[in-house]
Image (cartoon, rainbow, N blue to C red; front, side, top):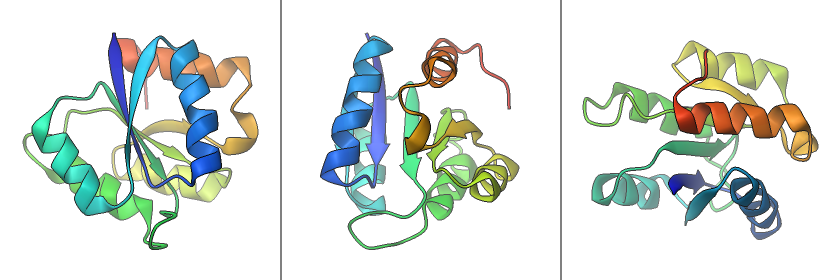
Amino acid sequence: MKSILDIGQCDHDHGLLTKLATKANANITRAYTAADAFEKLSSQPFDLVWVNRMLDSDNSYGIEIIKDIKNDPKLGSTPVMLVSNFPEAQADAQKVGALAGFGKDGLSAPDTLAKVVAALTGNSHK
């Protein structure tokens, strides 16, 4: 089974994302902060990382986590998606190496599930 690391979501949104992960036949692990995320990323491999635009725990910017993941020699090849409804935030995330992500408004959309499955199977494109 594939695995997803979900970073920075509130309880409600993490629950919704867990349902999406289940539909994609993936397990989900939660990280609250950047430090928590990097501890988990260093201890086990993940097939995909979801990063909230602004982390619920401290309002830090998810794009900074994406940059750090993509600039890390050991983690840089890990697929990352930004979770945000804002097109400009999605564009910024893709500029630093993220795959095309999705917004919380589109969690139940068939194309969102297709994006996630593609990312998990290595068939996605920036």
